[in-house]
Length: 98
Image (cartoon, rainbow, N blue to C red; front, side):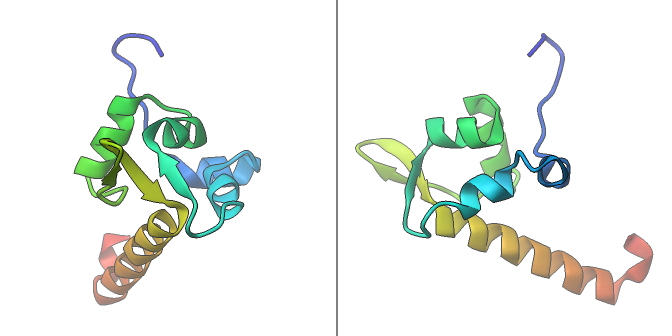
C-alpha cells in the first residue's frame, strides 16, 4: 500500500468477486482459532487495519493466547451477524437513513 492510501473492509466487494472474506471465514470451523496474522491474510490488510477494525467495532475484541490477540471464526461471524441484525433493526425504525 502506498503512503496516504487507506485500507477498508469491503465485504460486499470481496463476496462479489468470490475471493472473499465470507468464503474464507465460512470455510473454518466455528472454534478455529485465528491469530492476527491469519486475519491479515483473510482480509488482505496490515495489522494496523485489524486494530482499527476492532477499535471501530467492525471486528470483535480479541482474547489473548500466548500473549497474542486471537479470535475464533465463530466469534467473528457472530459479531458480523449481530451488526447486520442491528443495522436491519435500525433501518426498520429509521427508513430514511438508508
